[in-house]
Length: 88
Image 1 (cartoon, rainbow, N blue to C red):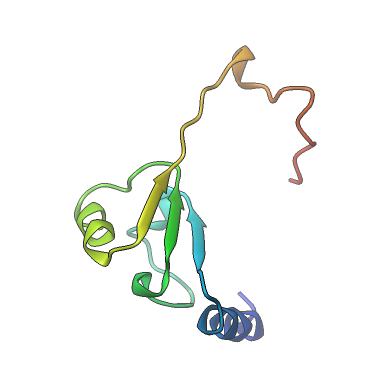
Image 2 (cartoon, rainbow, N blue to C red):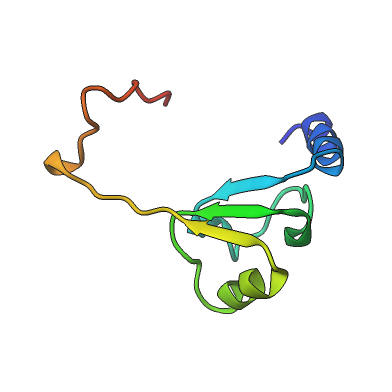
């Protein structure tokens, strides 16, 4: 992480009416190089699935609006041809 970007993200969050966080379940339970903010600063949390354990309860207790993605894989897991190419 670039520490300048972290400072900018903190300022943006502090000045936002709504803060959205998109993460996958693997981000929970592992050490972070930097901390941008607290879960209490997030209004809506988007996850691929609940991370499990104490994190599920912490998410529920935080009051954040939780959105868990639903995904249906078809055609052997390949993206539909109309989907934009991935940036990898």
